[in-house]
Amino acid sequence: MKVAGLFAGIGGLERGLAAAGHEPSLLCEIWEPARAVLAARMPDVPCKRDVRELRSLPRETELLTGGFPCQDLSQAGRTAGIGGARSGLVGEIFRLLDRRRVPWVVLENVSFMLQLDKGSGMRTLVEAFEELGYRWAYRVVNSLSFLPQRRERVLFVATTTEVDPASVVLTDEAEPALASTDLNARAHGFYWTEGVRGLGWAPDSIPTLKNGSTVGIASPPAILLPSGDVITPDVRDAERLQGFPENWTSPAEEVSRTSIRWSLVGNAVTVPVAKWLGSRLARPGVYELGRDCELPLNGRWPKAARFDGRRRHAVHINAYPKWEKRSSLTTFLRYDGKPLSVRATRGFLLRTERAKLRFADGFQDRLREHLARMELHANSSNGNFAVAAE
Image (cartoon, rainbow, N blue to C red; front, side):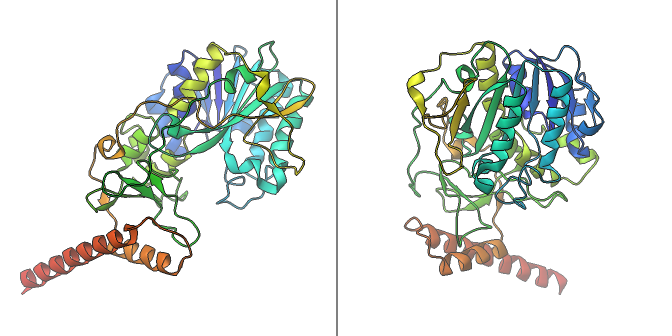
């Protein structure tokens, strides 16, 4: 299908769809660092700047995609709901669909939107699509299906065709081979910025890559290696953990600081997830009606649901459409990473010591050992500097 990609970011959704045979014919992205990446990596695809100035979609458009801004829907954001100034831009999608009903629509967003304000954002979405005559299906999909990153996102598929959207997003299901905690044998990802109420603990994988700040302050996770070293991954490995080739975001450095690449990677759609979805758009499966359940009455949305044109159904299915074979996280990482600093390690340990969380046996001890090594190295470096100065 011919694809128009709104809120394209660095093109993760479009790149994955293209790998499944679909062709991007239009991109739209307003953020200059992301535009620099798109210009370098997809130079033959026209890229409009502001969706609000887009009068209509190309006539050949068969699939409209949108990883619409999630700041107001994210648990980490202002939780202003879908009417928020940024997430409200999803209304531009409906403005364009009012002009012409595109046969297929794919939207992507954070899974917290299903819970936010008792699901009002999701309710707004589905009601708008139903009014336009679309059937829809959605599902929370975990990037861990394909890569060593635990990242849950909602994939929402709507269509006016005779094809059941459930046959696209709700047919594949795999049993995940989730790793158990073993500090001696596996690397473990966690968020060193947390430690009081949460940790983001991820055996043989990393927790969700975050977008950091819009001014380029990076927020990479930490990784405890079997050696006892604690690092933050190199941004090139972060790109690979999202399914991009390494240095995919390097063109952004021409218009912004290097650290902005972390925001670009954290905002992106995981490429293999989009490729899987694209393959099902090209070759739908067969939906099993036995998966249908009653929608909950509390207003919150389940992790998967569908609308068959008459009635909404919750769907019993997990977040793993596939389970790709993968190397260990230790082997996956190509670059050494950066040792977690004395300040960051000390602050994290202080938070864990006053937290009521349960940590893996030996985890805090290894952090203390890492801190001692880092302090020794810092003192040694300062001593060498003092001798050189004398």
